[in-house]
Length: 59
Image 1: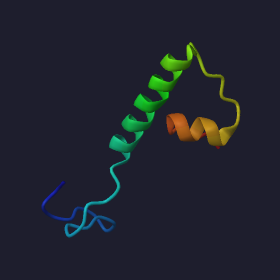
Image 2: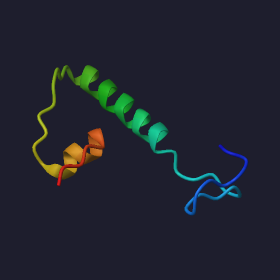
Image 3: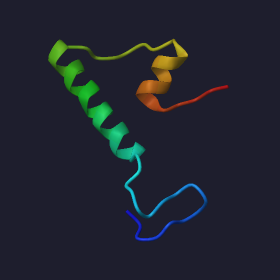
């Protein structure tokens, strides 16, 4: 974490959400479950599922 605020939306007095860390944990959890269940691939067609697992947003 930075020791000073950069930009209008950051604060130096609290640790904000680390989206990269959160995304990495989610991906690892999904990979573990897929391996345990013998799943080779996921087919995602609902926008909210794609967004949740990949952070991909298409408008």
